[in-house]
Amino acid sequence: MNTARRSTHTIKPSLLLSLVALTTSGVFAACRGDTTDGAIQTQNNGAGSSGSTAVDAAAPSANAEQDAAVVAETQPTDEPAQARVVEPLPDAPARTTPDAEFRRRAPPPGRPSRFVAPRVQRFALANGLKVYLVEQQQFPIVVAQFVTRLGGDDVPPEQAGIAHMTASLLEQGTTTLGAEQLSDAYAAIGAQHGASMDWDSGGAYVKVLAPQFNRALQLLADVVQRPAFTTEEIERWRARRLAELRSERDNPRAVGGVVTARAVFGDAHPYGRPLTGLEGSIRTLTRDHVLQFYRSHFVPGESALVVAGAITAAQLRAAAEREFGGWRQEAPATPIATPRAAVPAAPSGPPKVWIVDRPRAPQSMVILAMPGAARSDPDFERIQVGNAILGEIFSSRINMNLRERNAFTYGARARFAFRRGAGPFSAGGAMHTRNTAQSVTEIINEVRRMRESDVTADELSTARTSIVEGFRAQFATAEGTADAISDLFVYNLPDNYVGQYPSAIERVTARDVRRVMTARLDPARLNVIVVGDRAAVTPGIDELRRGPIELRDPEGAPVNATSAASTTSAPTNASADAGAR
Image 1 (cartoon, rainbow, N blue to C red):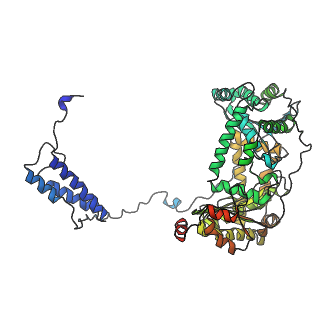
Image 2 (image 1 turned 90 degrees about the horizontal axis):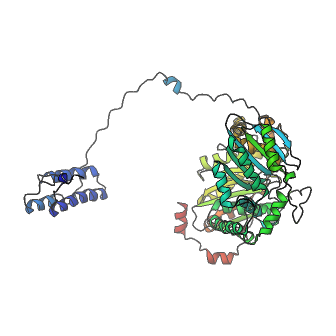
Image 3 (image 1 turned 60 degrees about the horizontal axis):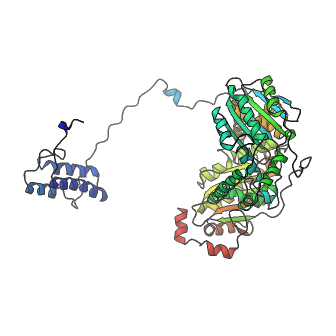
């Protein structure tokens, strides 16, 4: 830096006071509600009267009396500052562009693109492993999924979470590679990878550039066939999962899902407990439980390798034989039942009204639920169309009612959870606390409407188009294609199902929708679950006369009313009003 050009000017203390006063004047004017433009104008006039500017530090005041006069002139007063009036600009003349007429009307929708179902190739290895292939040579990417069709729907209640635990530990080291080594090996080939388990299936996957496929499949085979399940990794996973469960207690949507499952299916049914487990079961799971689940659910004869991407059948056959051909799974200590037992039906009984208390919560998570339909239901496509109209898509009846017409919520939906057994039907969303009871009534009304009258032609067309276009878009990527083909294996669907599905949806009629909605949904059987401010919502819920109200904890267990009153104080009217705002 050139020190010869550095400024040596100083500012006298009297001028600093002047600057502070100028700034304070503007602040006081703004606080009084005056326009700050007037304050700025006053400041500029005051500064100018001193014969110097704020930035001209080289020209100090003539004497102390003049400095004092400057300060006095700029002190704030009670008189409102004069606002500067800004005249509005005249309207600009309208421009007429060559495309003005075109822009007066929205363009009509384009014609749907022609869907060409992918060609599915399949073969089997000697050990019973099925192999599915869809060649997609347009991009140099390959996705490989190992899929077992033995999911977590046979887990006893006391072991809830074992399926999720086993899948989470698959990639935490094998007998040949430690957890960090395995992660580094995947990273070295730029792979995306993961493992998961749901009610009907599970497994692991890898996505990689085509030149790296052989190494990727080698790592995938190592994960599936030789997981280590070390005690160290099990305890690390347990600590992390327990921390997640504590966090989920503060998530109304997560709590609502757990409590709804218990309300619909009870304590003894596999679907009555979350697939990810509860705190009590997670604490008691052992390595022996993990090994038992793994050995009984990861077997070649009930598994498939599903591949989509830039690879040929000959290349895949050679790689699959090399990596999976020698797999002979160790028998579990407790042999799995053959054939696999059917998922039991949900227990019958009067509908429940359960509330999980969240004092002073501004919103209520409202869920209405009952047993739904299985994936194997012969009316599967017709139920999908009906549910799209009821609550699956944005323009559905439930969302238009609760969000658009009544402004109870930012969004409400309805859903059938199609599983090997009949999963739950649920409808609802996060509602304004003061509208909790009304939202229950409106959801019941929309379910009743689906049973009492036919849907409109526009509703039917929108629902069918939404489902078909979403299905077609799934095949735009290798991973979406692999997911869709995996369903063929998991649910024993024919290879041509992919090509037939769009036309099956297009054939659904309004009469079909009314028939299946009448058969599958009954307003009188809907359980009501509310996660919200008990004191604020109970009076309105009670007026609905849906049955006795029960207080439940975040895991769906009964809460003694006396102990609940002693641990959660009821909000006052003022606090309830604040929550409603």
